[in-house]
Length: 390
Ligand code: DHB
Image (cartoon, rainbow, N blue to C red; front, side, top):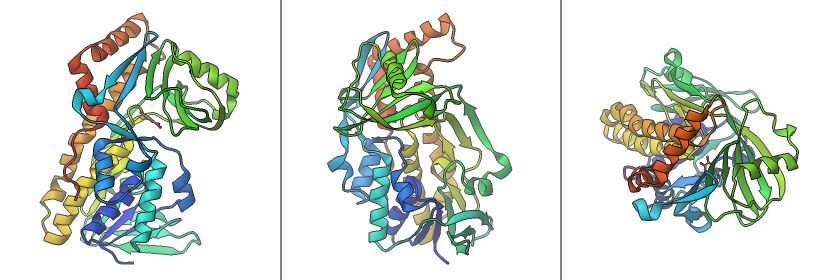
C-alpha cells in the first residue's frame, strides 16, 4: 500500500489525525491491531476539555458530543470532611464535557468509514523502517498472518505506550519516567448519580473520585495498591471502601458490573520525531489519570501535527514539522505537571507522616481558598487554549 500518511493506532490521536488530514485533502491509512468492537467498548476516561470539544464539533468529527455529552462548569474538591466547589465558569469562563472516550471513538470511526477512508482493524504493526528517508514504511501483519506494507511520506505512531513506533523514534533514547506507589480501582455501577458534579476526594484512607456516566450508570474510582486483583473484592467491600473515602457524602449504591485497576505513570519520550516518523498521544507521553489529561493531550498533539503535515505535504515547508516537538512539549509538560500535582495533592502517600498529611491539607486549602489558586486549577483542568484546528 502506498499513501501520504501512515497512521499506526486507531485511538483518539490516530483517528482524529486521519479526520483532520482528510479535511485538508491529505490521504492516510490507519491500522490498529484491535478489532472495531474492542476499540469501541474499552472503558477509558470521560472528561473532555473545552478545546477538545470545540475541535470535535467544529471539524465535524462528532455531532454527538454536544448533544449527548454533559457540560460541567465545576468540580468539588473534598477534604477534611468538607466539599469545596471550584467554579470554572466563574474563574475562567470555561467548562469541560463529560463524554466517554469510547463514545468519541465510535463517532470518529463512523465518520472515517462514512468518508470511505482506509481504516483497517486487526492489522498489527511489527516495525517502522527507513525513518530517516522520505519513504518511511510500516511493516505489519493482518489477522490471517499476511504481510502488509504501508509506504508513506510520513509515518505517525499513535499506537499508545506499548506500541512499536516509540522504538523507531526514541529507541535507545528512552524518556523521562515516574512511577507512583498506588493505582486506581475503577468501577462502573448501576445507580443514579451521587452528585451533580465530579467529586475529587482526599481522605485519611486515600483518594476517591466520584464521576458519572448517565442517569443509570456511574463511574467511580478509589486509590488502591498497584498489585490489587480486581476480582479479590466483594461488592460490599468495594462500597465500604468508597463510602469511607468520601466522608460527608452519601453515595447511591448499586450493582457493580465492571471493575479494573488503572496503573499510574508519568512518561515523556526524549524524542517525538526521527526523520519522517512522528509520535503523538500516549506513544509519546503518558500521564496519571487524575485530571483526565490523556486524551486531551493527544488531541492537542494532533491539532499541531495536522498543521505541520499540511505545511510539509502541501507546501513543501518543513519548518512546522521541525518545530513540532518543541511546540508540543510546551503543553505536554504543563499537563504533566498538572496531572502530577493533582495526583500528589489528593492521594495518600504510603509513607506519609503527620507533616506530609498536614502540609497536603494546607496545600488544598490554599487552592480552594484563593481566587488565584482556583483560577490556576480551572485554567489547567478546562485546558489551555489550542491553536485553531486545521
Ligand atoms: C474520569 C476520569 C478521570 O481520570 C478524571 O480525572 C475524571 C473523570 C472518568 O472516567 O469519569
